[in-house]
Length: 358
Image 1 (cartoon, helix red, strand yellow):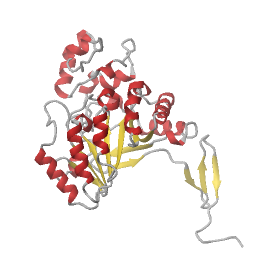
Image 2 (tube, rainbow, N blue to C red):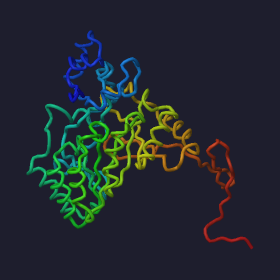
Image 3 (spheres, rainbow, N blue to C red):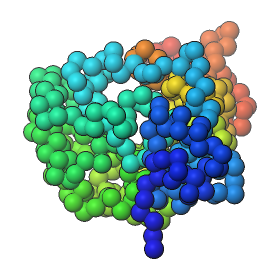
Image 4 (cartoon, rainbow, N blue to C red):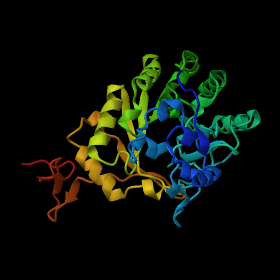
């Protein structure tokens, strides 16, 4: 019989062969601070014989999480600095985050909102709080896009999802609704026709996009791809977000395989996020230089369709900045020197605007 139990407790992790019995006390300490949930679809992907398994590294609690560095932050990207009302993060002029829920189907060990999600936290916005958030959007004409996040917004019922997206679609200046989710990977069967219909109810008044969080090619199982196809075949385009993680996807072969798998699934890679300064995540972060080297290795060897933008969310709420490698340098004579994907430099003479050769 297929296991339908989401693993949440140290005893369940031990029984599933994901944690050694003598680690129970340490696991209790981690679970007391950070949420734990590994649904069956992801637990089945973990290779119990590989101590460095990249799926386990993302989801199985690690004692290193209790080693909090002085520069790590409870709110590493500064959401709180841009919350005009509860549930809204308004960091950029033309778009807002609407944080519907604070629960997920799976809890990633590197989550930048790990201090804000999970059991013991408010599960979802109350009806009154949600209405105040919607009122803020209605009263702010500059908002062109609303991004549903959390937590994972797709854990709510299709009925409630329909209510939210149709309310957004009724706001004249809102033209795009984007949903960020792990659910097609964490629980592919949860992507039902009712859920897809709920999102389609907002169309064509707004364009609806789904952003998938995926970090390793093994996550894109046949079941996950089928779940994504339900959105795409219904006319809902998909993009992806990936977090650069040490020991998970920080080599060109793994990252390239993931990006190709996404494109083959009709999902456009959008962002590659540098790891945030979330508490207890230093063991999973790479350096920026390592991320730049990875992007250099990908460019020219993988289709441009596969290449995301490498970005870092600045602490303090200052937003995302691209941190990918540069291929441009300026020579002393004013000419540009452009590096190709093989690392060779080429002069590119520029003429002043409006000038012409006689």
